[in-house]
Image (cartoon, rainbow over all chains, first blue to last red):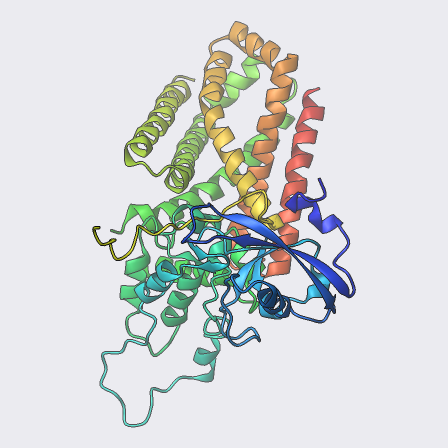
Length: 250
Length: 109
Length: 131
């Protein structure tokens, strides 16, 4: 019963050091078997080590294990995965805060290529769909496009996204309609350009989002806010888009 | 595609929600104070034209609110188009039928 | 031997084990909002029927009162009462969010918990009042 995910918070957090057990999702696209899990045990760990360090040690034991990683410090967003039931970045998750066995799964709701590596094509397609670049018809000015400090401030909390996918993969609306609902990550980017005082395509952007799926599958559940490793608030960004739509339509 | 399915539906859901809250609180207090409960008091209350009009508006808001919410649930979970249309029709019938009976009741009360 | 097609149809499983995924309080409040809404959609028909009966005359009114006083009806009313109370408070929470209140993570978590508690409290209050 204590292994049942919703109750696992009642268990004491992981060991202060030493040996730790890991249960890792495995899937081999070339084999005939379906997905499964594999247990690994590591020794000589310290609570200050990051989960990514442990994964790299596991890979020394078993080089067939696949996972993505790059910067190792929470900036690139490649090592997003489901850690003990919650999406996060392995490189900034301390071993000391994890309950054992540490259950590592791929991001939920996103097709798995192999082991912990998921297919982000649809996610990136949706990012492109919101046209995440500044659109201005006005001729390029001599120096730069000016912006007041207050106008610049409105972009705080919108531009810092690293596109790791933790939020969209935690969103039930995205699980049920991944192809037609844009998901919190893409919508946060939509808000980033809708809110930009230099962008002249605001009306077009709002128009494109006004259907039953692209934005309005969002029911403000806020799972995205709960998991975002950068502490961003996609739900609030979506709320801001709705507010602008409302102002535009009345 | 714009219009009702996106912002329109969302706005309708919120506007009806506000009226539903206001009416429930008001009617709840009125009815709780209307002790003792009797047929005469009950039908008399609904017989007042103002009360009947507000109650009818409540019914219509409730059904519109239920339509937007029920439709959201079906769009989220039911993907085969035929089944979804069938369930949406069923929902529409259920709500419209209730609405017609309710209207007749309020008018004749 | 015929050459193999360049790539076999790709196998792409999707991990989505809802019993292994941890849901924050906001998600529990949200799914309960949905369940309570569906519950009340189902209750609309019976409610209109009870209303018509109660307005049909003193005898009909008596019948509705008697039916509402029975044991099984009590249980049904408590469940509907929970649905109503939860939906009511969760709805208020969303309306407040629409005007920009309580959107921060911690506030949203606390208001989610408050909504769950108020829903259950509402059910208890209705059960006690009808008993």
